[in-house]
Length: 59
Image 1: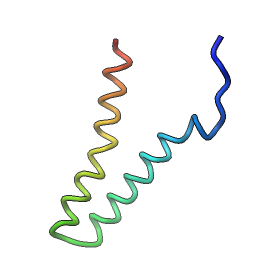
Image 2 (image 1 turned 120 degrees about the vertical axis):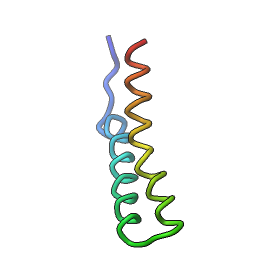
Image 3 (image 1 turned 90 degrees about the vertical axis):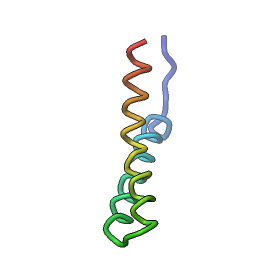
Image 4 (image 1 turned 30 degrees about the vertical axis):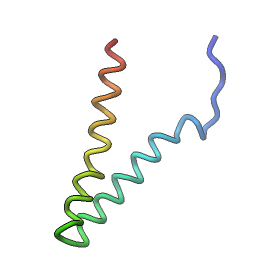
């Protein structure tokens, strides 16, 4: 049987991905130049996380 996990451990990664996405969107809307690069990096993290999860799930 699997062990019980608390809400904190279940929602930690999705909450982190949501916060990074929101921060990326805010940075993208508030400036140009280096902020664009930060926004691209922040918005790429959830995409890479989904790709990683799909790859791990497949094996």
